[in-house]
Amino acid sequence: MLNVEEIRKQFKILDRKINGKRLAYLDNASTTQKPHKVIQALTDYYENNNSNIHRGIHTLSEESTTLYESARVTLQKFLNAKLAHEIIFTRNTTEAINLVAYTFGEKNIHEGDEIIVSELEHHANLIPWQELCKRKKATLKVIPIKEDLNLDMEIYEKLLSEKTKLVAVTGMSNVTGTIPNIKKIIELAHKFNSKVLIDGAQLAAHTKIDLQELNCDFFTISGHKMLGPTGSGALYGKEELLNEMPPFLFGGGMVLHVTQQETSYTGLPDKFEAGTPNIAETIAFKSAIEYLEEIGMENIQKHEKELTDYAIELFSKHKEVKIFHPENGGGVVSFTIEGIHPHDIASIFNEYGVAIRSGKHCAHPLIERLKIPSLARMSFYIYNNKEDVEQAEKALKETIKIFK
Image (cartoon, rainbow, N blue to C red; front, top):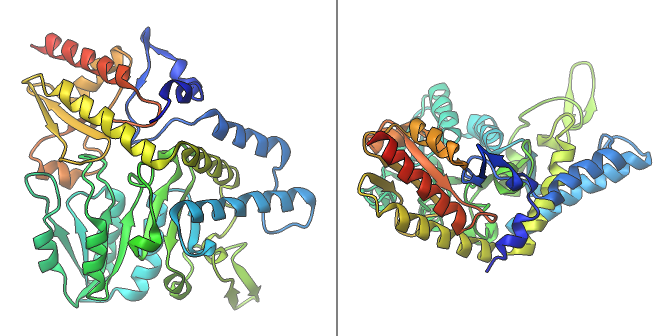
């Protein structure tokens, strides 16, 4: 199990006092805090190596290129992708999904085709497909959730057909913590020769990912949700698909030869990384991955389950509280308090040093499906402990007291 007290020493921000109280940071599904190792990697790069990559033969450029490309190999191994050039660096999951929509989607989706998403999706894995379907006169179909907050797999099977060209689903809901059976989703889709994209923004930070075993066609991640800097993320795509997809952005760094009228493009991964990328952030993201590997993804998963179960146990004691969390869900606990708006809940929690999220969580259709205006959400990570959960319950009690 994790030595949380030792881990917490690596996160200076956790020493802060908020309104005179210790900081209980429980907004990790939005973004995670950064350990000293990651912050130092940013500083070291700018102080010692700062240069553009892939373009120069001087020492700084060669050092920067080596650091940047080593991050690609590190992420490849972390996700167990087959090839390093199947990893395309992006700013975040949103950019990665849009990349697929504007390349694979524009080339392969036609009038009458169908794309399947689920009711669990973050807007990042919904709106790009809505817009693609509008442009291409395709149909967007939705896998509903059941009362237990899991996807209805029977309906999913019925939605699949020869018209299905893409299935795009989350690996873990940022609202309910639901973890769909993505292995089965992928296997069923492939029977109809449909491609599958997994939005791994929430999942990859909390459990071990094996892309070769999963056999999905695309997988996306955001570095800032797994201890890395903002502006770091990646798209994984199978080599044969990426080779067939046209470039997404055009400019320097992704060309072989340019004339006044024509341009030929490089191969993978440079074809999809036009311009100067987020070099420092990507290098620091490598440090975040190494830190997670030192701790162990299995240990992280066990620790989060312990905290999640403890939070549900404490919050369930209060009859005014309704919890939205499926059995065997991830480290996200969303809830409402009868008669109290979630924004008010979050505001009072903040008075007691507890940082939680409130609102629709970039998942408006799911919130509407749950028949509520919005939710308050706690989400856990490696530096959280039972004291954070107990502090949240104290804030809960005060919130109920104030409004009741």
